[in-house]
Image (cartoon, rainbow, N blue to C red; front, side, top):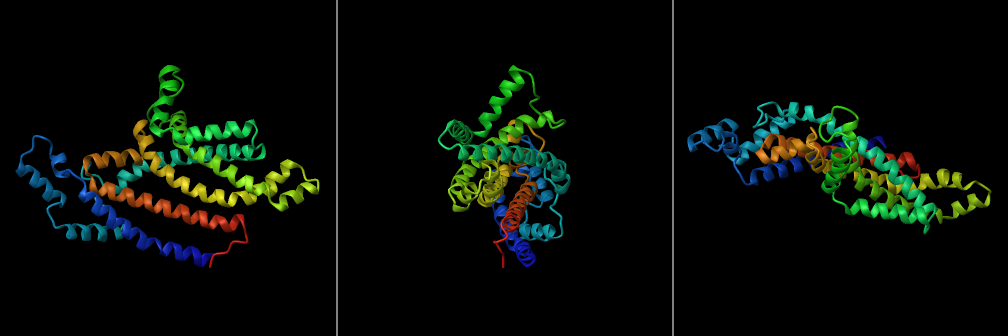
Length: 306
């Protein structure tokens, strides 16, 4: 197992290098000139040229890339073109709000989704199944931005129960986490139901019932462990979905996190911030999938990695 983890960690390097090359090319192909945006609409060509020189955008593309990649390997992601602060400081100041929002959304989505899926599988073709799957289909089909605006209209504007923007207290997390986790909970519910339906029909489940084991114990001890193996895979994929979905949710709720920073950086063509954030999201997604692979062996000792 240790050798497997080490090989996967070493495999991060070429993957991140490819991502770095692609995102560098992508941001430089975006329409618009960051020098013109920073200089302002009233700036003349001479001022814009001076800004381009200060930002290093007047150098050949391959020279810019070599400067970028050599500094990244040293842990230096450059300076924001807009705020003139180090990119690492910009990201560090926005990291925790996004992290806590993602974790909060993941916790309630997994717990609610798995509970709904298990109930739907145990009482298949009965009202818990029908209600649970109807909620799941609704959650999947409803766009996150529309759900966010609907929740704000009801609980903030009409009822005045919850705040709409900011991240100062736990109340601020309720609406964004509900919005961000709704689709994940729906996917988890459907996937857990499908997995449990297959497990409930296995011979060892019938054997446990024949031995007089209570239905609750059969489901929790024998069913849950075996049904969790494919569910864990889906959890890892959905965590990656949350990272991407946070961009829309943070924009809707004006959340001071990485998603909103990325949107603002794209608007202003802030190349260093965009490149650093995409690299960070890629690294997080790869590490999450590595953790999921390791959890396989913890849940099912029959799985071995060589």
